[in-house]
Amino acid sequence: MTAVASEQGGADCSTLNLSSEQLFDAVPYWISIHDRDFRIVRASAKLVADFGDHLGERCYAAYKDRTGPCSECVVKRTFEDGQEHTSQEALFDALGMPRHVLAKTAPVRNPAGDIVAVMKVFVEVTEIRTLQNELAGLGQLIGEIAHDAKNILEGLQGGIYIVNLGFGHGNQEDIRVGWAMIQRNVGRLSSMLMDMLYCAKKRSPRRLPVSLSATLREAVDLFTPRAQQFRIDLRLAATEEVEILGEPEQIHKLISNLICNAIDACRADTKQQKAHRIVAAVSRDELDAIIEVEDNGIGMDPAIRNAVFNDTTTTKGSSGSGLGLLLSQKVTSEHGGVITVRSEHGKGSVFTVRLPARHPKSVLT
Image 1 (cartoon, rainbow, N blue to C red):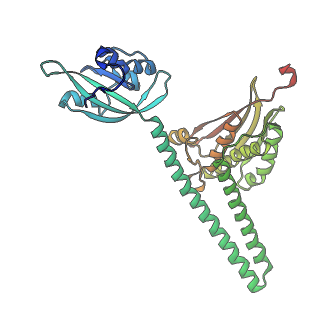
Image 2: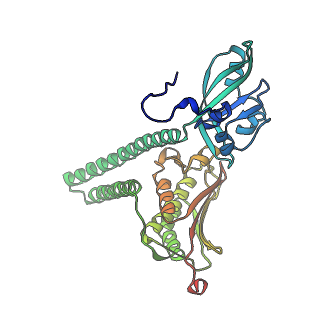
């Protein structure tokens, strides 16, 4: 591609006298030049600013924290065949954050035509990759919700059938059982739709005083009968009064989702001799209120654990859509907090929520 200067207006480009060094650093992309030993012999100013100065280091160690070359190294391929090559890669910047890039290599030749180095140009595509992941997660969410909705509709149809059977035979017990099925499935459908609406909207919660100790106690009382139904020991550990400023209904929903998720994780654990337990605790440190829900259920392997808050991953196999954890993360984020998880497959999980604590007036004055 050849750039042609315009004759109409503007400065005469021929007087700029730009050096190759200035042009190299002026390019708005990350550029590096490598020798045959994969060492970085030159890096653009933008690459140094964002990834640090790694001159003389091997590229795979400097940008990817590897101990050896990549299996499909495009720098190596360009040295071998003298052609341009393209790859998609993940690098780690100076802060240790992953940056997804589209990389292209080209040979650097001496006057005799021999390849003496390879130039590699990186174009960042992190935002595009993030959007791809979000769209994939959205597709998974839609599929899981459709599956749950199908199960609910089948429950409604079953309830209607039993009610009609009861009316047809004048059997009040059938009518009672069928109507209970209809009510239960309408409740499930209503809860699922409300969660979907909540996740779809951006909102700023009200800042009202919320007692986490009282809210946790209410949630434990609410779920104790369900836990007992599956022989799960649900305990409360709240030895001090802890308050935050937030939306009471949303905080109750957050805690309820975590306890409900723990019950389902215990139910999914098929070890017959295992005594399942859940401990819901609240405490605080100097700055934060801390909610912890610990279970000894099925747990998660590293892949699920690392993705559990990035998409609609469910920790309950085919029995859930992951919408509850997505909502829990959203509530936590909107209240200025963070939610994390520690988990090991077969041993259980600990979900921890940290929210800004409401300090007593004596602390503020």
